[in-house]
Image (cartoon, rainbow, N blue to C red):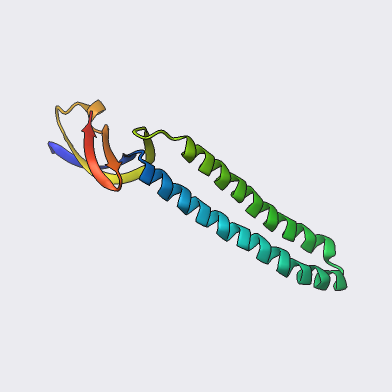
Length: 134
């Protein structure tokens, strides 16, 4: 066997543009609105749940569960707010890692190993603008 195909992860980089920043911030703000609605809904439904739990003698246990659920959402909200701040600090032209995709590479006897996994895909405004090798 002289050649073999391997599965590898390829990094996807994005060149920051104003359009890219606005889209990311808009998406995060939508998530923030949803979380805020979840918190309001949780606050509303927890009142009735806590009254029922008090009648059944389980107030402390149910209160802990409600508090934990609320705290989860508050922490997620804080993380999203921090992400919005980080995105706002990005400069146009800067490259950021968006994620990874899987790709197949073929290697053979005599190939240089260190260059086989050094492919990067570069996007700008949702278009592939470059495929870097090595």
